[in-house]
Image (cartoon, rainbow, N blue to C red; front, side):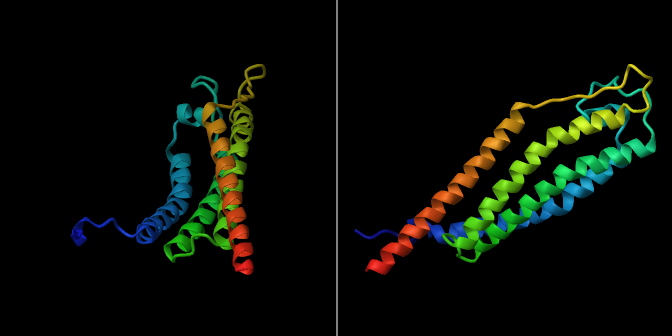
Length: 186
């Protein structure tokens, strides 16, 4: 019995290469678009939207001056920059995959760095929001200034995700080491 070529499963490495090439472009687009989106947000956001940047309720900001808007944007750009570094590492990893370099030391190194930058950005996010809550309420009358501290399930999930990717990179690296040792014995 012969199998028609149209029903043969696609080569897994080709599928990985194609998807990785596409994901590398997605990462690059995000690296360009996310800072642009933050800049546009800072230019156009109203007081209610700016309050969310500091984890505040809509009525928490009594008066918002231009310098507060840009300082808050600078503070918010710190975790964004860390996330962009993570996306760059992911882009480099996907680029390696797209060229067939799947189980390599370079790929696992990029995966670890992606996980580390994503974890750092996740930890920096609540700190940036806390600082922004102070910055955005500095012009309030005494007694109405605020400091908001918050940690949500989305941050906990992202930390778990970063830890999972880091561990997966370690598992892949261990597999590479074992494969190299086995090759030496053969």
